[in-house]
Length: 390
Image (cartoon, rainbow, N blue to C red; front, side, top):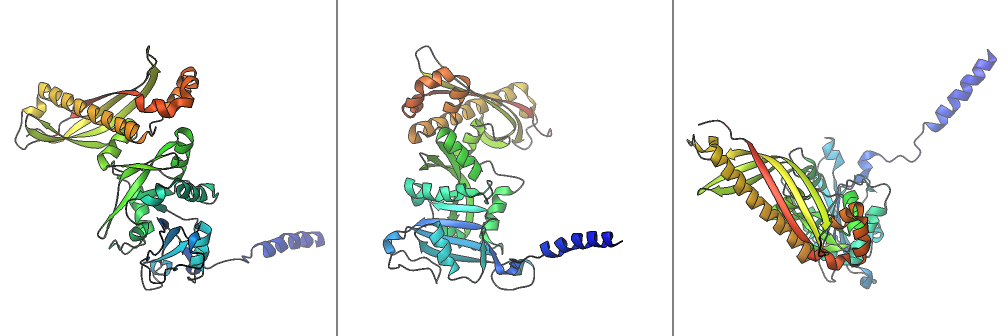
């Protein structure tokens, strides 16, 4: 019996000793940072936050305006009042310096491991030194989610994070919902921290989603093209859609085309993309995209009972779509290839994997060879459905 008591005491003591939380921080005492924005500090800029840190004795070290946003957790829980979120800006020399500056002015305990979005102003993104410095900070952390979204913007990141969307919610959470909703638009890049880091290492090129502000609205559309660890250009909405079709990552897409003087809408419902690379007899590198799609006619004209059900008419629609989209896809490849020199389609990686002998011969001169690569796009859609007969 005494032995049983001793065993019980041995079991109970560790439970009592190890169940305590000696370093706990109550949830309403934390600031769960959801988004961070970086703008280039030029000296003399006045940030919009009233209490923004001004120029200091070490002004030459100040290179960034760092802006953070976090939600009012007390309001979310229904136990508080006030603004739905808080925004703070400070001038700083580095990520760590900015963190310390803001900690001097806010009574919350900052928690960054639920971060949803990081926004780089275009000036910072085009500055290789500053971009590499900031990107490394986030990529190096073992605590941050690899699905963290990285945005580039032609606006001020500070302006975006200070936007009142009218949704009565934190801007960082709003941006995260834009990116993660079920029906994702096809006209924006969805690249995250992990994807961008891998693409830059493998092919020295990547896409980052572009975020813009217009009045009191935030819009995620288009993409920024990264090469040599910096931003080299921007793509519009339709160009971004076409890039992801070439990559085989957009199953659903809508096209407005003109057939027999009528504007109709054809919806792409499925997609299979196959990219092949090869060296021709003249020593030129070629890339060929073989793309097969299915589609529906989702808009035609009321009381047209014959055309959508006529086989010859459907053949003309298919031909028109195939010609139009093949040209558009080829044009966007050439734009990125010649204007930016960015191998975001991983043509070089494809050569390395499937044609190692050719790759070993040209890899040292790939930056000069890639802009001269010949491309052919063969997009073929087969319309399956035309809707209800009228």
